[in-house]
Each structure stands twice: as C-alpha cells, then as structure tokens.
Amino acid sequence: MILFLLQSLRTMRTAASARPVASPVTRAAILGLAAVLTTVPQRGAVAQGVSAPRIAEQQSGVTQLIQAVHATSANVVWASGPGGVVLRTQDGGTTWQRRLTPAGDSLQFRDVYAVDADTAWVLSIGNGTASRIYRTSDGGSTWALQFINRDSAAFYDCLSFGTAAEGIVFGDAAAGRTHILRTTNGGGTWSLLPERAVPAPLPSEGAFAASGLCVTHADARTAYIATGAPGARLFKSSDAGATWSVLETPLVRGTVAGLTGLSFVGNRGVAVAADINRLRTDTSTNVVGVTTDGGRTWTLGNRPPLPGALSGVTWVPGAGPDAMVAVSYGGAFHSSTAGRTWTTITNVVTTGVSAFGRTVWIGGEKGRIWRLDFTAAGR
Image 1: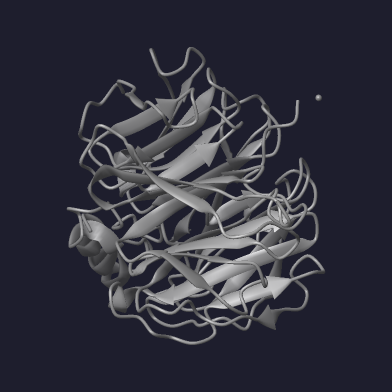
Image 2: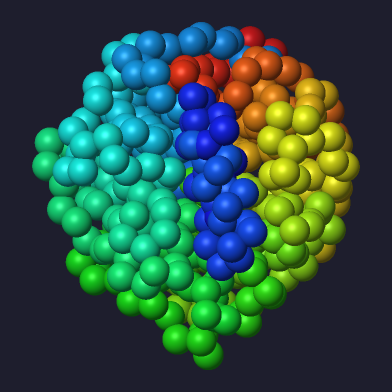
C-alpha cells in the first residue's frame, strides 16, 4: 500500500508515499507512483453556513508537489512535499518561506503537523530509514531528528497530534502486525504500540501517504486512522492513541484501493476513498462517506464531478455544518451539502488541504497553493 501515487506524477507530487509497505506488489505500485495539559489546532471543525468561496492562487516559490498542508491560525500555515520541501507562511499565504531541512532534498515529506508558527513536525516516507520524524521549535530554522525507522519492512504514512505532547504515527502492516507509534512527550520518544493494543491487520493492510490525512484527531483524546488495500477500515482510539478498535466503512476497497483521507469534529466525520491504480482516471463510486456517530454508521455522498483519485478532505470550520473541501488527482471541489453535491475549484492535481475558520488552503502539483475564503451566508 504505501502509496505512492505519485512517482509517476512526481512531477507533481510525491504520491508514492504508499504507506503500506507490507506488500511487495503494493510497494512497487506506490513507490513507482510516488514520485507522482495544551490543545493543538485540529485539522477541521464545523460552524455556520457560508456561500461560495473567493479563490486565489498563491506563490509558494517551489515547483515540487505540495503534498500536505496544516493551518494553525488564519495567518500561520505549514506545507510539505517531496524533494525535502517544507514551507511556512505567517501572513495567510501572501508570502511563503522555504524552511531548510537536515537531509536537504533527499526526503519526501508527506505530512506536516504544527502547533503554531514555531513548533511543527514533519514526517518523511519510504522503506526503512527513509521514514523519519523531525521537529522544529524555532519556526524551521533548525530541526531535531526524533525518530528514524530501523525496521526495513516498516513504512510510515501519516502523523497527527491531539495535544502538543500526545501524538501518533501510522504505518503499513509489516511482519503480520499493525504499526502505530505513539508519543506522550512531544516526540521526545516514540514507542511502537504492542499488538494487544491495536487491531490485527488484514493481509498487506496499510494507508496511503497521499495528503497527510490518513490520521486525524477529533479532539485531544479521540483519534482516527484511515486504512486501505484490501479493506476500507477505520481505526479509532478514545484514549489519546493508547488503544485502538476497528470500525467498518462502506467505501470502495481493493488490492490498491481504500480510504485515503479523513476529517473529524467530535462524532461528525467525513472520509474519502479511491482506487489508487487509477490516479488520474478513477471514477469509482462509494468514495465519500459521512458519519455522525463516530464512525459506527455511514451515509454515502456523491463523488465529485471530475475523474481522479480522491486524496484528502476537510470540514471547513466556519463554512456551515455541511461544508467541506475535497482534493484529488483530478482537481479540488467544495460542498455545502455534506458531499451530496460538489462545485469544482480547479481541475489540476491537488493533494493537501487544511482549513481554519472560513479559510482553506489547498496544495497541488508544481508547487501550486490555493487559498479559499468563504463569506458568511447572507453577506
């Protein structure tokens, strides 16, 4: 599984982050494609309704795929991608600055998670020692290596934090076990959870390192993991990642298909899925699902109008109870009807998405970043 999608699209963005390194077939597909207590700001929340957004493209200063995005305020946003790319803005995207990273351009940073303008973590993906976690506490001027994967069979895909101290990282199944790392001290130490604390994996089960959204927190204690290949299962923790249970979803699944991204606010969640074998041409149905009870039951939405594998999704905090934005290898889309209807934002490859208040940032191919500003309904 492991994603990635992107090597063939590498020009655009490293989707090869095929998270699940468990299956040789999946890995090959993914890597080949890939080239193509303090509360931490969560990656989505839901509020009042809004109308269609104002859309503006921003200048990132780079040409690599922008794979993951995380907004911590209306001004501070971090982004990351292949080629060692880590970006930060402190003015809402008017200007973006590239932050230097220890390994230069040799790593694929498929995920970034930030607390504020100073503190952030980035996750690089790949087999063995290519999977690493770095942390900065000075806005990206310097980075500390917190974790390097010494298991040649393991492959890590996404990370998320519920507080500035407690975080989790998910990786593809390897050696017949589920790989979830947990920290309770801000990444000072990362521990692989024992098998008794995690669900037994399906054969070759893993995640897709497509957008950094295969792991998300609904609140400080509740976290979810999206899995795929061969299933489309949801792992849930209610104790800050210490133990996990399994929930089923009705979304598309297959040898290289399954859940690709999640967004939760309380018990209300949205998940997207895709057939990664068809990055640019996927027209699968059952690729959008909404839950209002923490993942126990699901209502299917409709797929967005353009072909392409969905890679991520977010609720839009200020845009109404049913407002969301989805990204895919066929474009980006917004919905005010919980995924029943969609409006196209762009038809180019997009992979990362993050919302704060009424504002959304989207990352895509060739270093492209879009900012969406929703206006309150009636204004």
